[in-house]
Image (cartoon, rainbow, N blue to C red; front, side):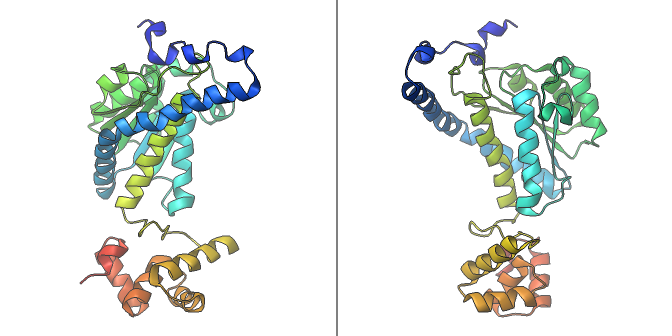
Length: 297
């Protein structure tokens, strides 16, 4: 493949003179280009929605979501995965991220690691990846060998494969079952995919993980109901969530919180239905933890 033909490697005429304009005009050029990102993601929403539903289906059967990439793409995958446990109190095993060059590549570029297909496959297998899981390969160019190697192995195992890229008709899109192509156009700094492509990728990953957690019942309304009260700030947030969800006073919410064993979802069901902790827990168990389902017989 001729790399100069990739969309992510094209020169952007809008920023051709960016080094000779005022600082304010420079930032306007960057901002004008950034405005195109959300529209590019919007065009890919149908594909993202399919991916979310498939991820949830796999997770409900014991599967996990793995992200992999190199450079900025890999860092974004690791970041998204690392934020799921503190946000939703899920196991760190549920969403995993691995990057070409290993954890040291999160801070310092590891040159050459992204060029090995075998390394992508072997590092994925070392994390215990199996046929129940989902692999989301991330590559702005859509041609990173490390990612393609992992995708190839995941398909051999019978796992679901998703590809997130910022180039049309990419190798990655051809290799996966569910391609997601977000095309925000040429970068302000030619080839610097940490900019528009990186932002577009972050938006997509936000949707994949957040959408999955919503469908799995970790959100009620728009409230983070699986928050764990591990410090004063989070205790306060938990009580405010109960206030909002049950339309009670703060004192009543505090009582529900304590009576529930400091579990927000249990407290909400107790408060809305006027039932005991044991009854609320039984309802939540039958509803697989989804509050909306637990509120009905």
